[in-house]
Image (cartoon, rainbow, N blue to C red; front, side, top):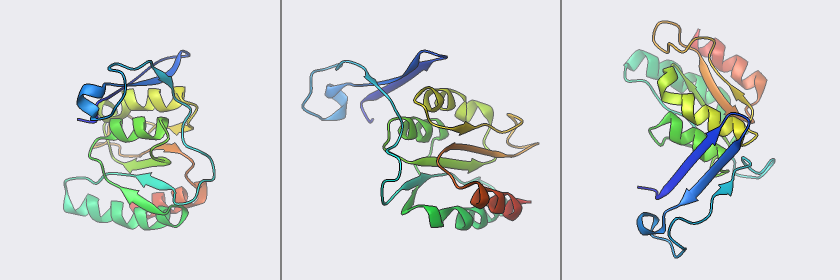
Length: 154
């Protein structure tokens, strides 16, 4: 594992701790919590996290939408967990996250953590990523690129 724990409460801030025994770092075990403040604005080489659906047709649509989003970023990351992606935006490891068609249970906890870290978060209108798919977005994602990405999906 990553040896980290992320947590937040509504209006209580977002925090992370490191467990040195599992993270492989030289630090006191269960170090003091660090308050999260999101990514550094305007840094070069920004990283966008995303994910892809299991169905080939949805994946093709997601790839077309990703093409619209990528010019604003230096690279893309695919970690495999919407919640973890959102936590890593909250702690500044990643600069933004955008994924189409995830379920509410995939992102709900991570969205709270990112939001409590001061990251702008846009949740889908519906938590149902299958019947009513939409975008889950956190961080500085260009609104016009997202609008073009929405059109690529439509």
